[in-house]
Amino acid sequence: MWRYRTALPIEDSAAVVSLGEGMTPLIPIPRLRGNLLGKLEYVSPTGSFKDRGASVLVSFLKEIGISRCVEDSSGNAGSALSAYAAHAGIRCEIYTPAHASSGKIAQMEFTGAQVHRIPGSRAETAQAILKAVRHTFYASHNWNPFFLEGLKTIAFEIAEQLRWQAPEVVILPLGFGGLFIGVYHGFRELQQAGVISRLPRMMGVQALHCAPLYQAFRKGLLQPEKSAQIAPTLAEGIAAETPIRGEMVLTIVRETGGAITAVSEEEIVRGTQELHRKGILVEPTSAVVLPGLRHLQADGLIETEENVVAIFTGSALKAVPELQKIHRRIHLV
Image 1 (cartoon, rainbow, N blue to C red):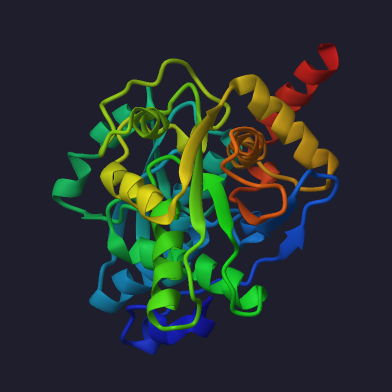
Image 2: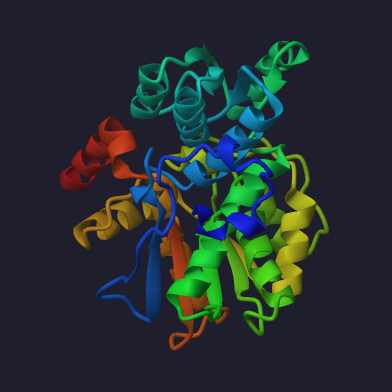
């Protein structure tokens, strides 16, 4: 990722904290209707795209002399931040929902991070951290712009892997909106520099059990309404009741001619199984893109012949107990 050093906001090269993240594979996904390439972010050092943001954010913390930080996360961001903080010698505390995947919590604990398991929803975890951030640096992957700077490198890589062209469509899981916005900014910077001539249409996929951005898009709203999660979802990584950059996400969708859709739990189950049977070993949050793609194709928003890049965000190895339940459920049907 640090091949794009001049486009990243770290002044001191000695402060760069890297575990070799970036330049993840971009491969064709076989036996599907349409031209779909998968960006395999789940092969990153800690198993998700969040490593990019953690690398830049922790480098910033090191540059300004931070020795201790806190973060709230449903899993992947906490796993990434705790690993990069450990590599940098920075003490780290993570607040996470008690129901988060055991594999992700184990990752955090293995790095030496202090993990606080909070009962209730993802929103309640965000509330629980408020006391801690009064006296400790809040290294938030949702709020801190340095995290987004790392995520924009996904767009740089996609363009480089496509011989400095943008795909017609980028589709990705959508929760708080950081990945969506980061990828957009990467393509926007490439366009402003004259490297690419047009932006891809940005498409996001939510879980129906927690889909405030989908509901806002469907109603033509400029910003999402407050919307409680109606039930637990397998796609825990995108269960965001109050996406803090929701207005920006909806603006990007309109600007690029994109769309937002939502998928059911059964579709997430089937999408996970289908991707695994193709050798694409993702966690359920990543699998939403496959049924989401089919929704958008059925609605005429993506044509079969268009070049589409799907971003597969997290590894199946983070959610083995949950995936075993999914596959047992499939075999019992």
